[in-house]
Image (tube, rainbow, N blue to C red; front, side):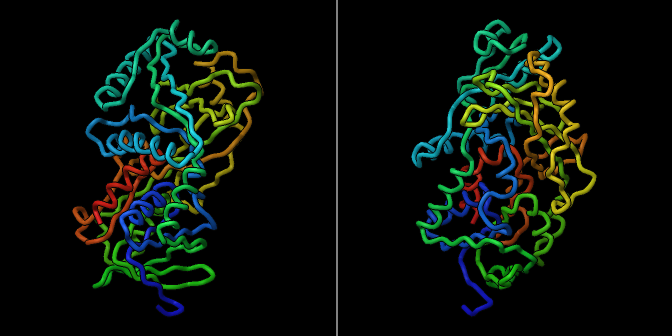
Amino acid sequence: MSADTYDTDCLVIGAGAVGLACAAALARAGRDVLVVEATRGIGNGISSRNSEVIHAGIYYPTASLRRDVCVRGRRLLYAYLESRGVAHRKCGKLIVATSAAEEPQIEALYRRALENDVENMSLITGAQARALEPNLNAVSAAVSPETGIVDSHAYMLALQGEIEDAGGVLAFNAPVEGGYVSAAGYVIRIGGEAPLEIRCRVLVNAAGLDAIRIARAIEGIPAEHIPTLTLAKGSYFGCTGKPAFTRLIYPAPVEGGLGVHLTLDLGGRMRFGPDVEWLDHNDPARVDYSVDPKRAESFYAAIRRYWPALTDDALTPDYSGCRPKLSARGESAADFRIDGAEIHGIAGLVNLFGIESPGLTSSLAIAELVAKRV
């Protein structure tokens, strides 16, 4: 090794929940692991801009990768959080029909949940739903006791600790600028204040919003196996006053997302979102993460369908995130992609494309699959 090169067995690009889980799985297997992250710390991308919900696996097509890794990942995640003492709570959620017209959609979600092997699901009447949550307006609801919430940063810190305990290394402020497939593996160029080349035998591209850009910047990865990115922003609003619910409340889903739902943090604070704002570009560097206060108007209308008592001026702009979608507006939602050699024909390379929700929930199951592929 010289001052401007570094050799490692496994290089993981991206220190979000998925990248860290992949690195931990490889380190656990005795591999030499380096994680490079463009920002100054862990979890500063998609992983810092989600609702911190542990999803049960209800919404996704039964024969999809998304369903597989969500259900498996959720079970693994609860066990991991318990073993590591990471704060979380299995609070459950209600998916509500606020009119008779929505009931078939909720019933269909319930049936899909059963097909997806989601445990302990039930359908209840509006009266039963109000007995659980007195402030709720619903004509019926599906109950998901397996849904929960987690301190996502504490989870990622636990993964970081596991990587480092196993001898793995994390490098921050280390943006990937490009690279190429070599006879011995991969050579990846790192920019920033201390540019260098990293030579590795295994490359895991878990860069979230930047995964597609990075794949295109690595010579030797066939362009036909790199999808097109579509960006959809989602804004969240906080809510003043005491919490009105003890469970998460989800409406019937909408195109591109699960509707403006109510989530709770571990302190009980209510927040609402995300909505879906399809962006007119596909450049992650151009995403404006500020929350437009005017979007509250649509939030009030959506929330009052299931919480009519929401008062005027109760919502305050909170934060926003961005989804790395592989399907455009109006198209059927694309599945997750975990592209190994069986897709692109290059040994030792795994590209993770389109890992949006439920990526946090699925992270340990995704890591299992990545470790098997390499």
